[in-house]
Image 1: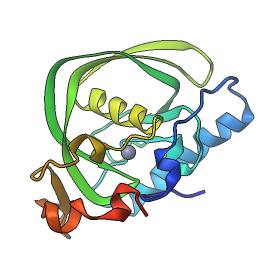
Image 2: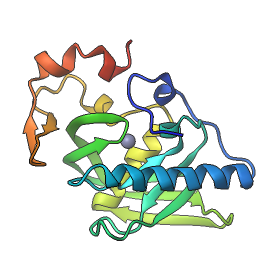
Image 3: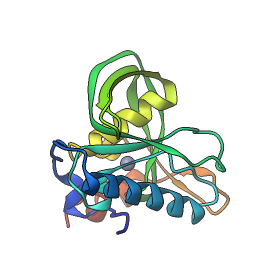
Length: 190
Ligand SMILES: [Zn+2]
């Protein structure tokens, strides 16, 4: 089990709904939690906010979301099964996003600032979640993964929207024409 990165085709597929939450599904969730925590241990400046099952090569509609987005020491995650956006509204806000499957590239992505989500918890309970700000952004990013969409798709062609992290953990703009536009690996065209 490992985190897959572009240009892996798995990241571009549509995932299927989970019908029964059984041992196999619980194993997938456990693997996602472990890989998120392991990834974070290797990335001192970054927080692993969430992960979607396709990112470990499993095409099922499962995401995990970190419970505490501020404290690196508190790495517990809630799993959401078959999450669906019921409403995305509020004003569109543009902010930084990164992705475990798009190594070292960050982007300023416009997203709705308020969302309402429907999903199931691991024990089968149906929940509705109202989220704003960073949590709303994270949920939209992860649910996109279940439909084969990456954050970079939302800013394709936007020249000043791409960044990369330098050795000090600062985000610095990258030259679009030179590093992004023709990067077949990044866009999954290889
Ligand atoms: Zn992602």
